[in-house]
Image 1 (cartoon, protein in one colour):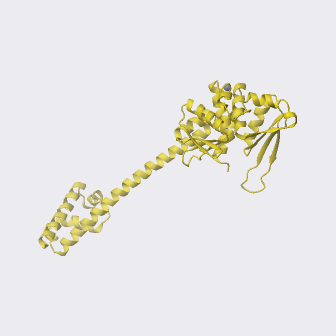
Image 2: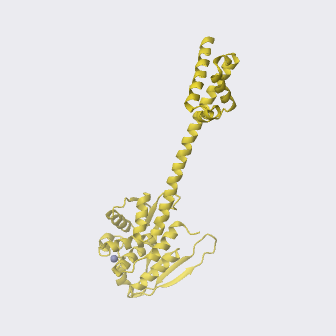
Image 3: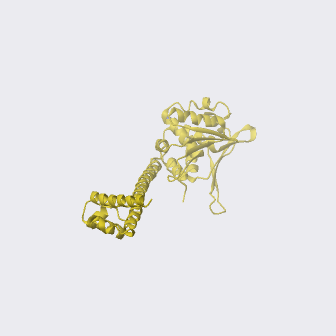
Length: 312
Ligand SMILES: [Zn+2]
């Protein structure tokens, strides 16, 4: 079964927009996440892009072809072991048209001033969304709906990570940022915000799955609270019953129970016969109200207390 993050990427890769401006923004972020530059003869540039996700590979291929400037080749290395994913390699052989494309996509000198370079790509709201989609396709992950809420972008360059943070903050997403040895994590831990982000990037079905899981969790918590509450009530009934039974035993052993009259006698017998009954249930047995049962049991407790005081 594919992971939830893979499902999200499949949905994003299928739903991606067709506007030319957005395609470049998406491609720039996607390549920034998974591509490495090749240098060939006469300083010509080429490109390698690898991913384990077939939908992401197809999307990268589609976007590269849409530029009309390069012809990528695709190779698949099949997983030899179980539970290992295939790897897809998109390769653009070093050739003269690659350099201008890389320049257009802000891939050259990508470690400094990426934000500045990407400003042209990020001018419009639609393109900013596409940029984040590309970044997620290339280096995003998100927890399963039944797990703790967490969505992350993992970037290899500080400047690129900073750009992602900048774009997300501009859209008012509450982002966190950590730096771990050449790897930069940008994360969101709020469930609602993650749903909003996925829906905005073009994965409304995944967002819906998160919402359903969240509702289920809420219902389950409510049920647990109710059960706990009933357990507490039951415990109270049991505690009271234990106390009443002790009082009845004491009165009976002292030989004073019969002397307290038929009503208290009947209440005492009903309690002895049904130690686990609530007051209302005892009331049904005796054909009297819950309040009346409570009154009679209190009298029994009081009589036993008098007896205990006399003994001292
Ligand atoms: Zn656009």
